[in-house]
Length: 181
Image 1 (tube, helix red, strand yellow):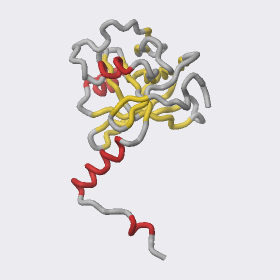
Image 2: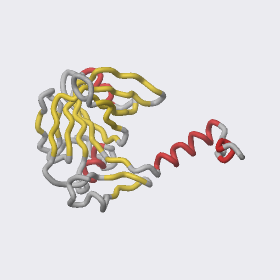
Image 3: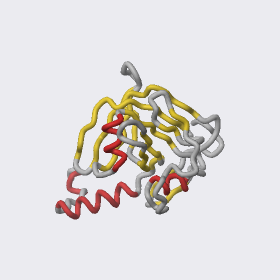
């Protein structure tokens, strides 16, 4: 019987990186905007790499990955707080603004944000918002992995998540108007 490893194509380092990026572009993920405010300034950026870590810690814990050169990463490291705003399917314009695709200098322009218990801004009407306090940060390659304790959560009554896959926004019919699994 042939080993499974022989069915996997091996690539040189540069080709492996490109294959990794292409493969990750095909994985579906929710779109979130991470925001912060405090002594390090008000900042925000769009992310696709956020995840729960554990519900079974003194406070639930999460992680988010942000490029180490991002002004938002620097602000979070200084402020010690951030809010993960999971966007609804009709909020792709907010995602584009915080990803820097619109060219607007003030990403928060026109948005009525509410300060969470940590002081981090919660965007208007997210699907879910996790108000977090930074617990640990570690740089891995080009990104900081930011581990946080969740202090508060806001959950919308209705809505479906904004999905990103194949380098485009989408929505899931499975979750459309269902509100839960």
